[in-house]
Image 1 (cartoon, rainbow, N blue to C red):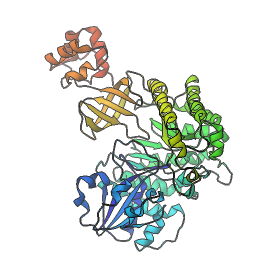
Image 2 (image 1 turned 45 degrees about the vertical axis):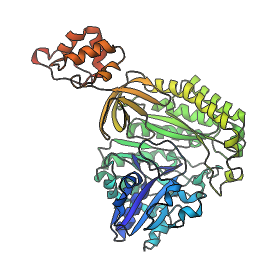
Image 3 (image 1 turned 30 degrees about the vertical axis):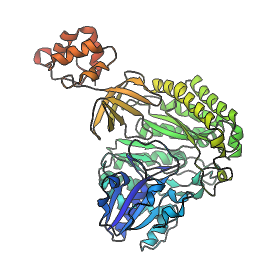
Image 4 (image 1 turned 180 degrees about the vertical axis):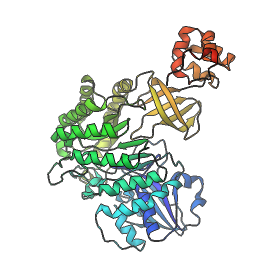
Length: 546
């Protein structure tokens, strides 16, 4: 038996930290199945709790690599330091973007390290014969390995990252590891077969990620800026839904704002297709990186600030309307990278001015990601390393705090106003009387639910307050089960009314509740309670809204 140890990945175009599962475990499982090996898939979080899970493995394939570090709620990625003490008695193969880092050789001396991307080399290492050097090489393995998702501890509550193509059509940004990939498109029929195979295994949540610009999938790459193909993408989406009609989440990841700026008409049609055929709460990550044109030029970034602003406006025009889960259908997010070449104090001022202009125009941004550059060997950023990161540490801190306090909070209030009903929030982590929950979605909004809920419980809730990048919400309550602190947290109810409700329950009808607390308090409470059993005498009384 061969073990697959998923240490999680986070790349510019691929996410595999729970609830996401990257394509890599599925590709590897498919290879092993194709070659006649049995396997066991384990996440690093499961392994830390119970290392005996891989006792029977003769060989362990370790997947790892956080190229764009963030804060993770769903799991703790495998660190480079952990590698040294991991399964010392086992033969191990290390794959993933971690191999691109400048690692201490002592950490990896017990591993057979394969180059990244690893798929062709791994298949040969396992005894297979490689005949196709394109990304279509992974197609049959993606389908064969679909069943591995059932071994994930959160199954079926996982989001499967689906690769459409590898590489970046620009490939010149000073810091980005996507420059190592040549453009290689996957056949859309096989992408749909992969989604269908996962759907048949019980998966209902998908993200069309692991590509640098979804708008150019199936486009014309003979041009310097590839021309999108709206009709091909519309047909692609239609076929997904024809074969998999009960999908709950279909989202995407990256969109290059340069594509939208150069091809506005084609992009407009694709935005309409995404609003129509993907699910609400969708976010397109835009690589702004810097609003300082001098930094853009010195780091060979593709999109100028005015082009990014145009792309934000176009996406808002069609995507800002609210969908079933309580979130806008399709909004942009933007990424800032701090520490790039040519960065000065004025760069931070220009970055903030850009966000102020977004706010002045009344535009919505679902996500503003601010991170310090991670420098990889053999990239142009290696020339200066972390010099600007260290030099501008205080500017970075001030800029980030200003954005979180003055921009993020106001933006959240516009995107999810108080009282907004958010449906299908998945509970993840309990901390005291608060449970942190998120939609199964791309770049999901963090929600602090007032109440104690088990992991993988799904809850509907209404927004009551805001943090800098998160919100607080009261779950839709069964009055006869509600806790005092939950009722008190509903704006306008107060301690006295909450205590009165708790003392008088159980209620047999809404009429009883209304008589107890009065018409005004009842009107305030009604949106926060679930439908109750109503006695025949009260069946024409008010009912809780859905």
